[in-house]
Each structure stands twice: as structure tokens, then as C-alpha cells.
Image (cartoon, rainbow, N blue to C red; front, side):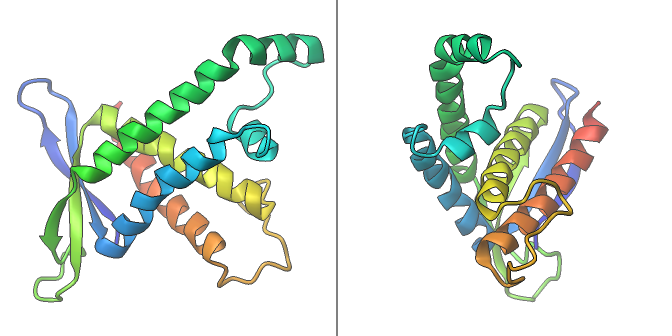
Length: 178
């Protein structure tokens, strides 16, 4: 079960530190997400709904918006690709641990990642992006609007809910940072 524990402040920088604990199955799911998002972003025209959700319209005037996309579009995509590269590196530095849920002897295997404020921000941006993609795919337009015909056991819906919980944990920690 995902949990985030405060580790105090870094002696050199004074910034808060946290340790994020994940079950191995949670870490495995998260490890696959950057590549999936990268595949969606590889062809923005084929995934217009996703791209429009990740990069909302900035200008009401269509001509201004086209010019904005022409000037910034590739840079925004490259920025997202960099985020995915950084997130993969974050997941690669996770260290194995026993019983991440805090119950000694339970036998659950997991991983832990040390986070500072910058890494916490990275995780938040990544989780938010994946949630936007999932919500777009599921037709969700707000946190409490779920399609009535969507079965609760849908894996995408379950992942969206899990990531919502993770995002909530990360947001609470970010609030402590400032």
C-alpha cells in the first residue's frame, strides 16, 4: 500500500525530504506508464483528444491558438518527453524493501524512493498527466463524473482511482513543503 513518510529536512539545503513506499505491484504498474504515455505523445495528431487535454487551449481566437501551437507545440511535447525520462529515472532508483505497509513480518515486498521538493513536483506532474490521459480515455470530465455504463472493476478506472489517491498523498506533502 502506497504511503509517504516525512524524513525531516536535508542538512545541507534545509528542504523537506520524504520516503515514498510502494508495493512491488504498484511500482511495476508505475514503471510501465511512462512508455505508454510516450507512445501516445509520439503521434499527437492520432491522439488529438489526449493532446488537447494535456495541452489545453491558450487562446480563444483560433488563429492565435494555431500560431501558439506552431511556436510552442514541439517544445511542449519535448518537455513532456523529458518529464517521462526523469520519471523513469526516478522509478529506476527505487530500492527494494520488505513490508512497505509498515507491518513487520507480513512478507509484502515493495520499493522505496527518497524524494525532495523537486522530485515531489516531478511525481505530481507525472501522476497528473497520466490521470488526465486516463480520464480522457474513460470520458471523465471531472472528479465526480463517471460514465454510468463503466463497470467499477474496469482496470483503467481502478488505475485512475489509485493515481488519484497517490496524487492526494503527494499534494499533501507538497503543501508541507511551502
